[in-house]
Length: 224
Image 1 (tube, rainbow, N blue to C red):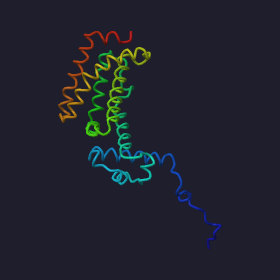
Image 2: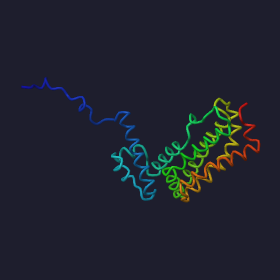
Image 3: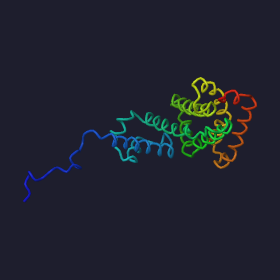
Image 4: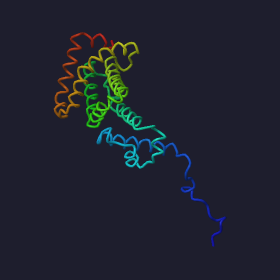
């Protein structure tokens, strides 16, 4: 016969309620953002509700509102996370190549990241909400452009370039982004076929590199 002193609480059942562990909280964060991303991209901003997000995420309303005061804040978090994911990592730059070839690699990587169906869908949602959230639209534009310029400037200046050399290369990087990234992204936003865009990417990148080289900007910013 089992007595009360023989029974021991099950460690798995001992902790109920209270604050979740860091791992659990991180999982809830991820599930909420994943669900919100899916809904915003599929349904659009207006047709998505916080109630739908928590149902899809398998989370409670309290969990969502403890992190985001309203739908606008949730949408802003989704946008920031997705913009971060479109940036090409510096480790992908082949530093042993010439500056022109480094630009070709970085240019293709930026386009590959930014022209995914998910990224284009997000940009469309941002554009449609710009009239009510202009600060967010400007933030997205700035983060996306600044991130692209930073990647290109680093590729131009070199792996171990000093900050002043990278700053000098930023002007040239901005011109490269304007000639390559901006028009390609606009074509994607209005519905141009991805295969067609991919087919013309190399020519657009090569034309931009040729113009910058002829102008002497790549030669003067390349590390000696």
